[in-house]
Length: 177
Image 1: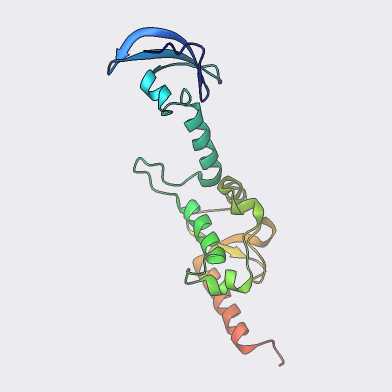
Image 2 (image 1 turned 90 degrees about the vertical axis):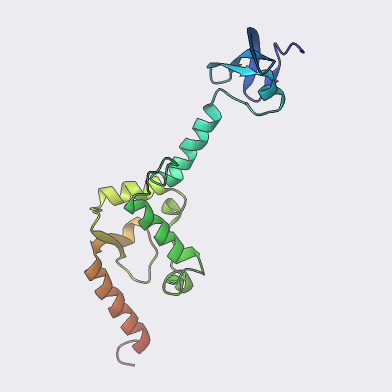
């Protein structure tokens, strides 16, 4: 087997032969760019299957959590209600196949940039502004976007009354016409 000491594979630099074998291949001691030491069989290095000590995966997970902090975690945990509120808000505004799109995205209602790609920013705003499991998100100005200055938390019945009133006025036209 070829000596890999000094070779770089992804973030790993091979520093020593561990004298261990796995499936007939040398297991190499590698120094990762992040400073961790890991042991990797030569077939994983040569085929590009292992590129770090695990820090790349950790970085990817952290990046995903910035956007999708309370989504399913792959271990049976269900998404939180607040996460679903965020997803549903974006779907109403961005997905023409969503049944509520005509009342939101179809009318030009958007989700502000601050919230659109960062669930944790939305979550921080929600928790600081009275979010509870029994409340729904409501736009103060029904023609305005979903953004911190135009949203609040209200009961479902209050939100339903406001929505029905808005739709009634939209059908009837401006008062006095």
